[in-house]
Length: 344
Ligand code: 26A
Image 1 (tube, rainbow, N blue to C red):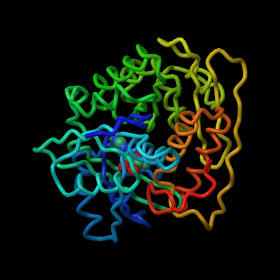
Image 2: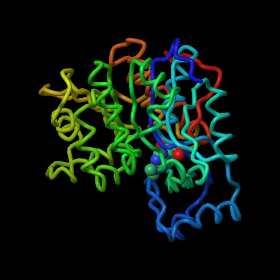
Image 3: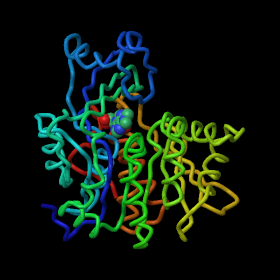
């Protein structure tokens, strides 16, 4: 069951177990992967998981972009504030994910698909870059009926804020739209992450269906560029692109905010209808403190959302996001460091 007493955030995404390795240049070459990208594994890439298990020291960590974001938000928020919806198999991987969420107080409202294994993501680290190669497995069996299950329904009814990982749009636009429309009907914010360049590139029509409901859109520089290209914009200027996303068609009455992160560069903020974008400097993390960037963007999103739920100003919420993003890159994988120090 889900405890809805303090519940504020419901996130929806693909639960994945990350299988992370370091110094993976040869793996990138073998499987034709880019150093800093996220892709769905093609049939030829499906042997990557076995290959890294047999040839590298693999660290297993709870992943799935929206799940990481929800865990990061819970890190900041009071106990019982977050719940996460997604589909897993009935296996050991799912147990590990649930345990990781339990440890951090994120309530797992999983749909369990008996016949399909839990999804996994090969995370190949080279230097400060991370390449993600995902086999969605059970995650893509998510069925809209799960939204009607007692636990999911209770969570959705109680939540004050909704978050969708854009990755979910490869298979789940119908469920995403149910949640987005519910948010609109009840006047609660719906936030959406562009997730990876291939989402606006290959799933543009799904993005176009969901975007009108989004009060908050988060992405990074390469995702923003990909959105611009898919939308036929000539510009490569991130400020102009952020403004164009903010000004794209809307179904809601509140102006949309768009946040574009840019690695160590300032985060750009655009607000629907405004003439000028805003910049928010990112605190520098010394190179020697950087372990890997896996999950940094997710942690940023979690911090921003937690800040907004706590009714902080958008400037303060972005600062919290930057602090969590910085904390995440000092850890192996999408993990935040305890004890919680000065995040607010
Ligand atoms: C549909 N795809 C490709 C994915 C993902 C994904 N989460 C959801 N869907 N591919 C990688 N990830 C997760 O992104 C996190 C880093 O931002 C990884 O599991 C990793 O934890």
